[in-house]
Image (cartoon, rainbow, N blue to C red; front, side):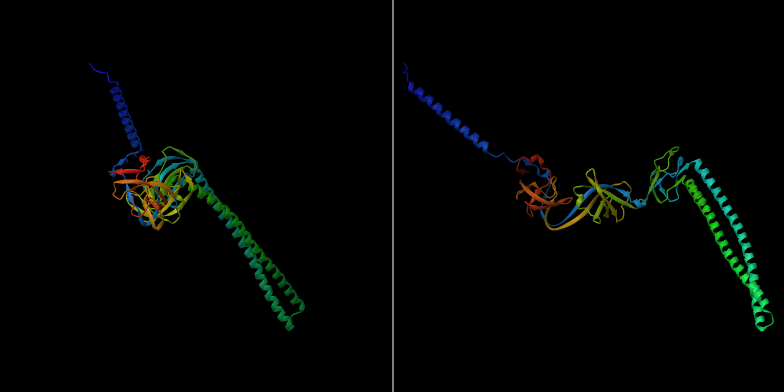
Length: 419
């Protein structure tokens, strides 16, 4: 028969409680230790990141902008309609090579044709009136000259007779009365001769005045006839310059009003680059700074010639005068990339420009460990920036290697592993 031993049961229960407490304490300690462990650094494939090494030396600051080639203003001819007309024939299409006298469009306007003919007839009538008046006035002038010549001859004869009579009077050959008569006649003819000369002078001035007045009418009619003839000639629209016809927005039968743009001709060998520079980068652009334009078929050098004072859609328009030889295929409206050299910074720390980060700010970059197997986030103070590089002021040293590519997916960690 078994003997009941209650003390053994109590001891067994105590041991269970003790071991349970020990296990609970161990679990709590492990849990606390695990909770205090730092998470493992995320892994990043080395081939997916872009790195660069901090250097010291000369850094060329540049800005870049997209744009297009446009003709220089002095080599563009936009042809407006001078009169109201109707297009009857289009002789050239956009893209055609033209010379200055090449006819692009033929137009018609019966009123202009009639006005030109009327003005020409009026000019001929006015010229005939001028010639008729000139002949009449010259005839009148000749009569006055004849009368003046007669008086002058009488005066000369009377003067000679007076001088002769005075000599005879001095010799006592003739009486004093005879001498006085001849002298009186000579004096009278002297006065008449002076009057005729003055009349002749006034007559000549009057003739010149009348002819000048009539000549003004002739000139007025000639200018009107030339204007009407020009309007008639302008119905045949000519290029005006040698170049390429780039625009002709008309159709046969279309009616145009004065001022309507008929055609646009440019000289393709005289192009400039129009670049759009971000307003945050355009503040350092100055006229005369060197530039390089990439036409995607070659590059050409140039210099900044104009900076638009206005900002449009966050960009500033900068015109670059092309000083080098244009690559093949360069033509108006061709898309180009342009870089402008701002300044050269000597003996500075610089590194490739990161994907994110503005100049004169503090950014965070991942700096690679010496063994290249990991990278740690460091704050970096940067200065002036260029297209592909940025100045380093604080946070990095020469020879440090940093990751420049976009690492925004690792914003929540300060360390990564590279594989």
